[in-house]
Amino acid sequence: MNQAKNKDYLLGINQSELERLRFQQTVWGPVTNSLFDRIGVTTGWRCLDVGAGPGLVSSELRTRVGEGGEVTALEPGEFYRGTFAQEIENRRWTNVRIINGPAEEAALPEGHYDLVFIRWVASFVPDLEKFMLRLFTALRPGGVIAIQDYYYEGLALHPRGGPWDRMPDVVRAYYRYGNGDPYVSGKLPALFREHGIRLTEFHPTQLAGGPDSGVFGWADRFFTVYTPIMAEKGVITQHQAKELMADWVAHRNNPDAIFFSPIVVDVAGVLEKK
Image (cartoon, rainbow, N blue to C red; front, side):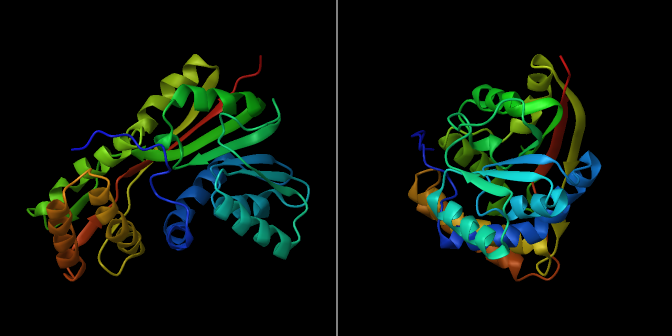
């Protein structure tokens, strides 16, 4: 496999990806909302949504914190910032703002937020500790940092035995191609402990379903788009991509097929008071 590194966001910032993210929220939004329920996000909280994209989670947070709270969406992609800015204007929210830039460079207030939330961002960053330390400083004492990200095991299609059995290794290679880490969630508890964050959540989730399920549709929207892209970038060959997609389509057309998602881990902790 080609070991060249690509600093661009691996999943793109465009209309097609926006539609995929919207569908993704219908599938995984309940998992995120369950985490927010357990954390106790409520009226008046000040929340930071890191890598907010088009603001799908930020909108949920705004619903929870109400008029008396605040939501900051941190997003480096101009297209997504513009999309969410229009949503903020349409809904006449006065306590939601958007900040441009990656977390490592953003002008964030120190000791301010009740919640810092990061979903499917940490696995893409090249320097996890630098990224997380900047966010730790934005938490108030007693504030919560919560991450939802992969421990990239569990991905599978049933029945097994075809080329698609190789897909977990292919996706892990794609993450590493972009300087990411498909096992990032496993590193977070140690990082929390080293920096005064008391671990309160380490909760894995795996979704599974047949061709008519939401999670199968979510996977279809990812693999039909990004398998050819992985071939274009040299992570796999064009021949391998055709084999993988042919096997995927065969499963998609099999009413007895089952897709198993990779493991997504909820990791949360509280900044101990000094």
